[in-house]
Length: 252
Image (tube, rainbow, N blue to C red; front, side, top):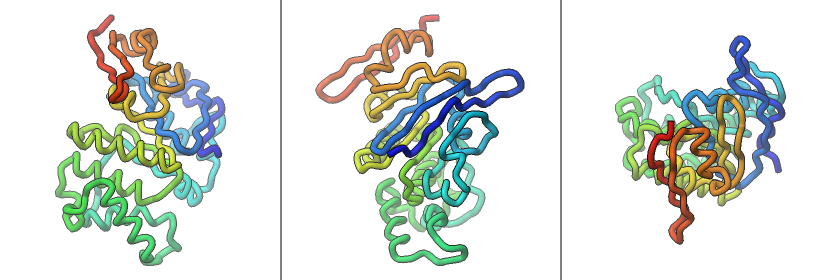
């Protein structure tokens, strides 16, 4: 079943295509890493796919009414500003709004979903803390938990592990991979190609607004692709403990 289909999606700024005729399909059970250098168009692609930017072409998500879209896909943008001094638990509970009638209180099943999101992100001891008083990395984990509480078939996250320490970067990617194993799907943009290689089932590589490679990590992270798109020489090997990817030196 398709969770997202894009057909010739294009976003222009003046005469410049920031996203240039991108077509793709996302089905259930995928952990997709969206990779590419700065300025490749990753954030613009994700926002346009969600209908948050004007675009030509087709996005099945953007075509949905807002209420249905909020139940089809959860969105975590790069910006992590938390505007209100509410508790972590209350902030995460906002993820349940798309599933509730207007003005309704949380039902027992909603509270159970919030509890599960808190546990999944290891935030049990933060439940009663004021979210605005947390560090940037802690706030990022809370916002991921809010997206998990939305309990959508598709989660789209723009650089969600930026600013997290290594342990929480790995833990977060393991959560995303776990969602894929459960049949949900995740599209996550990230710059750590090692984590992308290890935890993603599929990589989509962008360069100058175009999708230039799409497939399993071993087929996308070839020396030729990495050199051409990122300008680095990299080491990639499939080991018994999983894939290992390490940039070695700049080539240009």
